[in-house]
Amino acid sequence: MARSDFRFAHRLRVRWAEVDRQGIVFNGNYLLYFDVGITEYWRAAGVAYPAGLLAHGSDLFVVRSVIDYHRSAEYDDEIDVCVRVARIGRSSMPFALEIWRGEDHLVSGEVVYVNADPQTRRSAPVPDFLRDAVSRLEGRDVSA
Image (cartoon, rainbow, N blue to C red; front, side, top):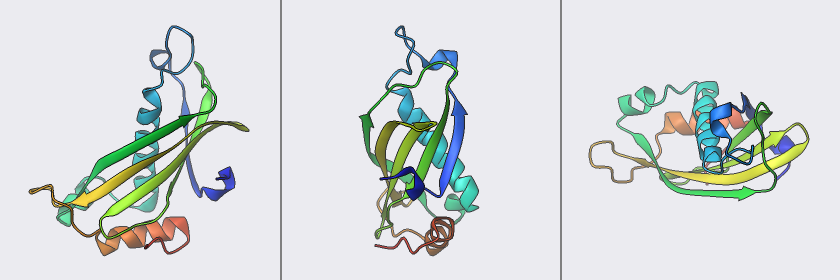
């Protein structure tokens, strides 16, 4: 995927607490960066998370995370967390993510969410308001 395939990116600065003894970002922190990027994605889409989903009887649960490491980020680097929804199925929503430092592609990954009833935690169809908000932000129909 090319960086230009992403309509949304959120910039972060690597903090001292996020690097390991080698001076590079500890591998688990990239999932934290993905989570921050997805949170900001919802904000950009105009979706109040989690309150907006809960008001519609929905919530999102992570069921899968994958990370491919290409290069390392280091303390004080400014990095861009690029986020896009690849598609929305009946109840699932895979996010494609990449992290860049300038022109250096550092990390790529996927985080798959499943929409569920917050009481039973059983999968439920993705609400139309969420599909519409994502389609507007992505500039395309994201329904599978």
